[in-house]
Image (cartoon, rainbow, N blue to C red):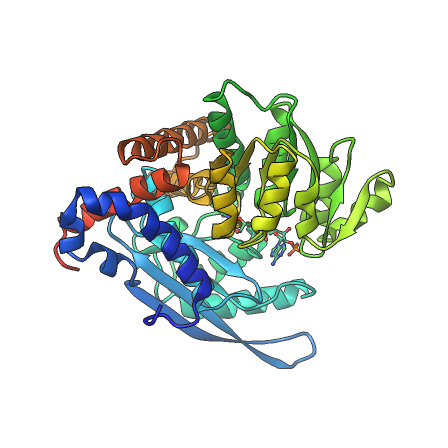
Length: 434
Ligand code: NDP
């Protein structure tokens, strides 16, 4: 903490991982002796830069850009770009740190990175988004490349922003390096199934957790926070597998539809019209809209999927979910549950899928996009989806195995942290003190 003052989110992510690794260091002192923990928690590089742009009124604006290149032990840096006013060094470092272990867990050769800006895309015109994004890439392009660092989307960065970033990268660097970004449109090098990957992956992970208890998604009630990329496709897959999704939200409030959310309406409102979730009740007057986000966790459900943002689910909400009989919780967002909330779930024996494992489907399909770009071919949606399904099952199995081997059977927090860590640590051990 003395080394990284004020970086609360980064401290929180680091504490969760360090606590999980205690049995690893007890069993294998070699990792301690070679300073793996000190080295892995210091980013290889943290780049911050000025992003000047001109708004529609002709006024000059300045935002701050970030890219953390955290670990290249097992492959090129890989991780999304977030545009949100809350972005700062602590947020980028927590996300980049988590990404190292998540990426290792996928079994694919990708290192850990993350980036973003404190730019707020809300209320900006398309021209403003394009000018900002071009300015952001004008600086970022100096540090990335298909074999160096491959960014993707995250909060506030979807297909539109990736398109503008790709165009600007190409314009500055020349040539056609399709593999420099993932999450591209399918017409110019993107992978089928990438849009759906994180949300579908979360639900495939839940399926595995339930299967071990002899349960399935059929007939279960589900509450999903957020209504962005991860949330929408988690809802879609849960519905396809026979669950009933009762509620979702945005940063203003949540909707509760006892008849089951009409996903076509949510998709149109959020993906096409870029409106607020409250507009849902104008078309579905039987549904309820409530201001504020945390209240969504007071809705009784079998399965809770926090898919919006960090620290959106605290111990109070966790206790309410438990009291209402929740069976499983899986994190679509990164670090949506506070450390205290995780404690509540684990103490009460609730099936808990941490983000590092449960939301790894997005980066997994990003790595499949990189593979397709390298081979200059495209797989079908079904091929990508089958690979995603298999990767999620294998992440579940390797996390369960590590949890068992290190004395915490069934604890996927400990298991996923250990399984991801061991892969990176072993690569670092043979690469010298770097
Ligand atoms: P989007 O921007 O598509 O959607 C984010 C959703 O969360 C929106 O509904 C947004 O509401 C809501 N939200 C954002 N900030 C807050 C906040 N401070 N309080 C309450 N709600 C908020 O992002 P994604 O769906 O891509 O990302 C969601 C989460 O999933 C993030 O934690 C991200 O890091 C994680 N993730 C994403 C992956 C991906 O492939 N996209 C992969 C792995 C993890 P509003 O519209 O009002 O802003």
